[in-house]
Length: 605
Image (cartoon, rainbow, N blue to C red):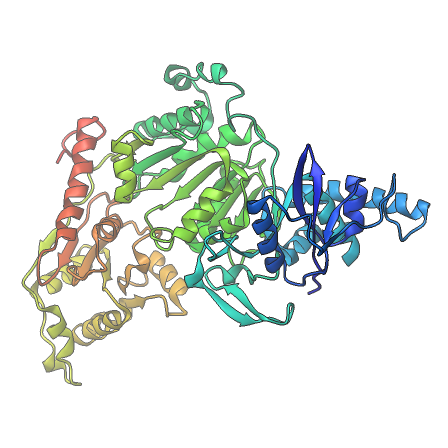
């Protein structure tokens, strides 16, 4: 990959000295049409030059009187002084024309140079040689519509930071570089998006301002969007919702249309039980945003959820371009109105979206990963808004809602209006001993009464079951235990975990009913819906089964209106705080649904 040599200079603008970097001094002389003070020498590493630039900007004194600055030749008019007059004018016109075509490609993005190239090749038929490409970027930089930054820069505290993902020195390591010829600092945290290195430029495209807010045209106009007026909305997307869904959709729509004071109440939480239909609830808010010409980002932690949501959005918005973004996507460089992306892909956007929706905000890997949180919120326009979707929101979000720091609403019941199945705890079993007693003989295994009863109940009632274990090793052990003790069911017992290449095929067999018992890890706690399913958590006192995980696992049961009930068992040696909190959480939602009048008569708990 070709990278230019970089030069630093200062120019007097509006009575102040300002520093600039350039890959072609002729372009800058043409743009400014005045004297420039240029630093002697060039740099192959943009990071090193940025260090000097930032240091000069912080000191702001004495830097023009040293011997390492000079003034290049200057004359009035076009300053491409190495070419004839006609060539000068035509080249300037070409750069200006290219900049108008390239700007929409870069706007709202934060990309490596090779990614800008890909975006240009996908978005336009314009071909630019290396010099024209860099001169076009330089012109946009001088206009202030893009920033040229080193991918990794030094802070004023003399610490390295990755500009793309925000990671600090713990994730940045020296790597031999063929571009700058040194041991170049490289970020490992976001390497799956391409190498972010100290010597390579990062192109940040600014978006046009949407005004004070991304939604309402004016603060006084937004006052007209009362809840009463929203209730009269005739959107077909509202008509198909159940009463609790409609209530939540109107609340979020009111949040979208209301113009808050700057930087306050720009976040909204939809706390909906598993299977409540969160996706359909956000459709009206998405519709309200895109009909005003704005763009929407829906970020979710997992690729399979992206693939599941894209056809649903395309069906709901048939005239709207819906783009799927994940590591294997063929649409990564395309434009659209609705972007459904894994949270890692949001690191390529910069202040782009007036509305960002974060699905499963509590799920791995988004939760507890500051890099992904940083990426999602940087993708949002400064005056934009965020909607969080979760059945088990993180405690910090719950606290912010209780304190009035964010707005929110609750959907405490599923569309079929039946209460959530409440788990039962069975303790006192040293479960690991049951798995470790096998020495090649069937007699060395002993049946566990509650597990035996559970398995026969599933078969007798013609249902299916998920059996969750805490680790890959335990999944394999439990699978061997079940197929040895119950050989008559060996063909209908399956297993799935992250290292199984046939995981997708196994899930399809579950959906077709070919597998009755699936032994799995927490990888299956979200996203898979089976109508007649029961759940057993093996060693539910394991640390991996926290409150969030147990609530999500219990949420697999009773999602179908034809089969709204089911069995959830926590099998453990001892009762844990996580188990108690999970049951308390589920019962709280059932009580709230009863209080709000959403449960069917005779189904109150």
